[in-house]
Amino acid sequence: MNGSIRRRGKGTYELTIDLGKDSSGRRQRKFISVRGTKAEADQKLREVLTRLDKGMSLDGSKSTVGEFLESWLSSYVETNTGPRTLVWLSREDTGIYIA
Image 1 (cartoon, rainbow, N blue to C red):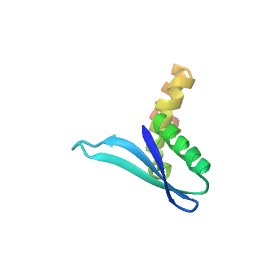
Image 2: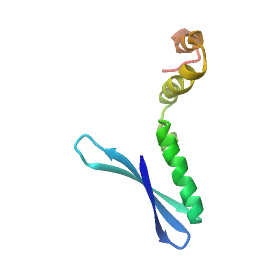
Image 3: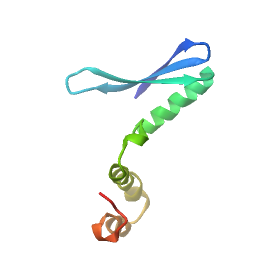
Image 4: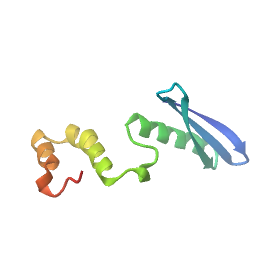
């Protein structure tokens, strides 16, 4: 993923995140406004790009609990726990995993 920083005014910067192209070939971008210094804008850009590289969404509040748990199972549980833990958490009758 690529991103850039553009100064909008005194103490305001715009981050542009390149998300690639959609199915019709149109360029997809995300714009984020940051108030503060250029260093703070650069830090925010790095944070956003890191989230995208890890497969996390930019707008965490827009995901459902089920979507979060699916992501958590695949990104954390599969790599950091044993296979029996994954099977146990994936079972519907444990009452832990909501899908």
